[in-house]
Image (cartoon, rainbow, N blue to C red; front, top):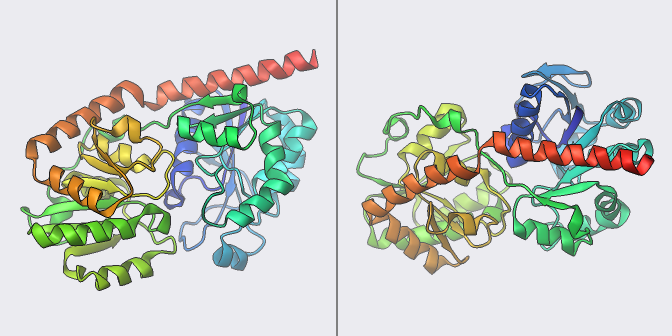
Length: 398
């Protein structure tokens, strides 16, 4: 198959979040399976120092990648709205070459010309919104405008849509998507990356943390939707009763860092909080390995990759019931709590105070990943979806 993958950001823009990683892992496996794979992506990201070759094809790990330059860097930096001016021209010229298209972004400028020319040329496309279908929070009015102009058409014309959880499948249905179009495919994790983990202690030594300190870790974008205010407040109460405990925030600022630091100061936990900025590769693994617990207190989350990363490192997790994989994690790799300060505090206290429970959650988490969430199995499932879409196209034409 000749496959096009469309995503807001691609390698090396890992700080953009989960879709970049998911798209990369799927696309790389398709390339390894002998398929011809092309990626269309934005070539610059707000507050990113990553540099790529723009507006011409380049080769990345056996795949052809187009990183499109924005018409206005100012617009991108101020509003996070992309403007890949060359994309519509390339789409008009080249889209008919592909057998199937996989779009990894929904309400994005980059999606509109892909939808338009895919429909015009009769190329089936699969849409994977990565949790962005809902409109109930954060720029909801802008999302509703997008939906009226393009969004409902993009959903309607998709050959299939992919949901990572049952919760996301229900969101597609609420947007009018036919249930028969929805396929549930979980995200995976690249387990070989976690076979040789760093020895415990490297992260602690680098940041001056005592070996006896209990480390509560958050790793991800510093964004208000992640519920970091809830975590800070729960930790502040915990630290009144528990000595030798540290709250560590790892990740790039996505607009919320100044507010979070202000809150930490107001809670009088400056001396117990650490902000490292983003970490990647081995440095990120060192943070997971040295943490006693990983916490994802999100207000809303579909399928957070960081939870699986923590599990792969044998670190127990706590997440809120607002996360789409809560039923997968609960009592296997950690605890699930309501979006509530006291309940989060109680969960932290329970796991930090029970060494045996932490070890059990760590081992169960690793086992769960090996059995259910490896990328090879997931790539085969998506390949089958592609084949069915192409077959359906030929039947309709016949």
